[in-house]
Amino acid sequence: MPLTEPRDDGLPGMDALQAVCRIAEVDPTDARLLHHRSNAVYLLPRDQRVVRLAPDTAVRRRRAHTSIAVTRWLATQPDPVALPPMPGDQPVIAAGAVATFWPHRPTTPPPSLADLAIPLRRLHSFPAPPFPVPRYQPLQRLQEAFDLDQNRPQPAVTDDDRTWLLQRATELIDTFSTTDFPLGDGLVHGDAHTENLVHDHHNLLLIDWDGACLGPRELDLLTGIPNHFHEPASRRAQFLNAYGYDILTWPGWTLLRDLTELHALGAYIRLAPTKPAAAVELRHRIRSLRTNDRSAVWHAVP
Image 1 (cartoon, rainbow, N blue to C red):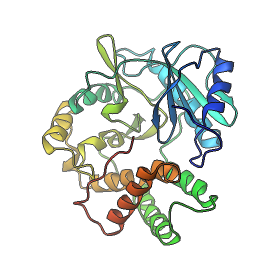
Image 2: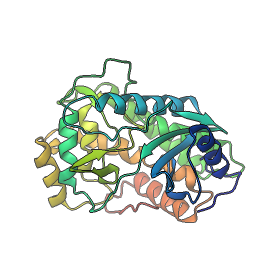
Image 3: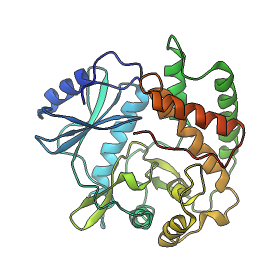
């Protein structure tokens, strides 16, 4: 799927892909775009690798370094939970992009929510890594998207909506800072859902560790929480039963739901100017948040 420069979504395009592949000495011929939300993710079929491209910012550099360090460390632990990156110096930084390279692994048959609970339970049993890992900072990626949007000639978010969202973000962050979490702090994946599970021989391993951090373990149980995607309660119950803890018995679960739903706006703010479906979904999501319409169903835009 060809991309041309410049783009208004802040994500690196084909020029950056070519540059980072030259440095990593991999072949970008016939590269295929797999995802285009918070990162541009390409399959490189000649080398059977996946490359994840993010804008070259201080936050994205830190996230990339953390994802490489954490997954390489997890590969040394018993009972694998993470797909390790490709060998070599990573991340690769060039042409305004921060890139990481990973083996390509199948995602079919699709894993279930119960499948997701197993590596998460193992992950949460590990000690903190023996190197610095950033602490969870709520809504950092949303602020990054707002900063990008404010520099556009025509922002995707109106001034009124932006003011409301920032005020709501401040309220949630303040509440988070004073909340006690029953499962305690530890290494968390930070974006745990079934799309981030791949098959590796006889294991299901987690991918996309950009959000890896030290924080409340409850952050990885958000797929067990009722939200605007209206996942069937039976599937959510299977996930929580497989993990071994029902987060819905804890009164603070709505805080994590609200943080997660606000966080999820970031990718759509980024994509709205170049993807009409994302712009429509962004308006729908903001409207449902502002009116507290819990019946509104959100849809992921590929």
